[in-house]
Image (cartoon, rainbow over all chains, first blue to last red):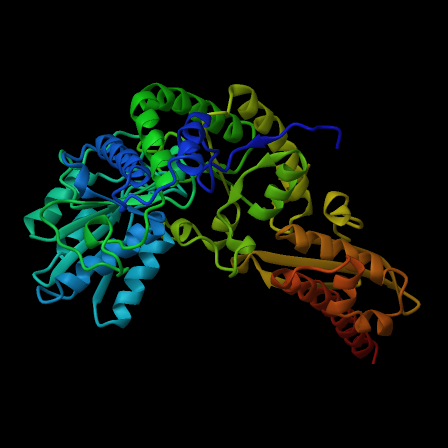
Amino acid sequence: MSTSRRVYMDHSAGKPVDPRVIEAMLPYMRSSYGNPSSLHEFGQEAKKAMEEARTTVAELIGAERKESIIFTSGATESNNMAIKGITERYKDRGNRIVTSSIEHMSVLNTVKFMSTKGFDTVFILVDNCGIVNIESLEKQLTDKTILATIVYANGEIGTIQPIKEISKLVHDKNVFLHVDATAACGQVPINVKDENIDLLTISSNDIYGPKGMGALYVSDRVRLQPLIHGGGQERGLRSGTENVPGIVGFGKAAEIAKKEMQVESQRIVKLRDRFIEGLLKPIPYSFLNGHPTKRLPDNVSVRYSFIEGESMLLGLGMAGVAASSGSACTAKTLEPSHVLLAIGLKHEEAHGSLMFTLGKQNTEEDADYVVSLMPGIVKRLRAISPLTPKELNE
Amino acid sequence: MEHFKNPRNMGEIPDADGVGTVGNPVCGDLMTIYIKVKDNRIGDIKFKTFGCGSAIATSSMITELAKGKTLEEGMKISRANVADSLGGLPPIKMHCSNLASDALHAAIDDYYKKQKAKEEVKK
């Protein structure tokens, strides 16, 4: 392979940190390394930077008060904190938790865990495009329901949920709404006030900040039981000395996202649509997963019949392209992605899926390069596959 | 990697003496092996596989291992032989080599069955 070209299109799995974010973080490792709880100057410098970061993160999601932002170690912790924290705190009100069948594992498995603690858990189905079934949601919100937790947009297929509509239904029934906005935040405008969201999960790396950082927005009307007890940091909701460089980086990333999101998302949407067309048009039996328009700007999830995703990934990998497969052949089980099955794909269709997630550094040339590789990869694997109809190989 | 990039003996044998198919596309792997038998030896052998890179590589490898062997030797080719010849497989991928040896054994069994059927017709 003579090519040394490398194209990274797996941004939902991990993103580069914006150089401006790295610059902003450095002083908080080199010189202002104090503990924000300390009263001396070192501590107060760190505290000031941390509170400024809290403000910019709050502004990114339209939160009125910076105090409603609780910093965590990432989206998984935020999701755990929201679900366990609210159900534990309000268990005398009822025992039902309602969620969707296309949540991230950190929501799905936390909800499943709560069912072992005696909670009645309901997983709402989605349509073929991945939109939550609203009628079913409405039916399942009973007097016993204390929490509904719904993803803002699924990271695997990119489908954006009608959060405002969901929020209205949920609040009409006097139920709290937690929204996992990990994949959506920084790509589409989110406003916790307009959309009437009680708890919102966001992640730093997903907006080009450092990994290992996240936040949970907690509205004033909600009280949570903390997961982590200790020195009482983060209003007692999340003890432990704060990760100041991480928080400062997250804050800087939020500031940049707020400023640049609109222009960048427009560029990425254009790139995405050109890319999808290029991937599908020249190849028969190829399809888009998810919704054609209610879709995250960065998400390109496609499938090719008769062949398997991981072998396509290997082919792409040999040409320097990093993407991801819907198939969990790479993961710990042989089951394909629960999200792809939830939108009604058969197992073999789900196994034939590929996911590209675009990012800031991706160009039209990158997309065209991948488009130029795909027909060869698909043709070769279809020639090997026993499932391919004969006429396709001729 | 080499056996994924340039798989050996890929294709079908329309007048095969034995055909073995194992796996299930639902689980993400489906493998078919075709053999031609001459003087109790595996003459020609080809495969078709739907599956991940390891599944394709193990299919290719087992056709190389089995080619020219007697049927008895073919039956003795184990899952471990396939993985070893490829220089080892990660534990999560061992089922791929199981699949390849199972497909070969199924093809040989199919040959035996067909022979038996032919003999019975003669009687």
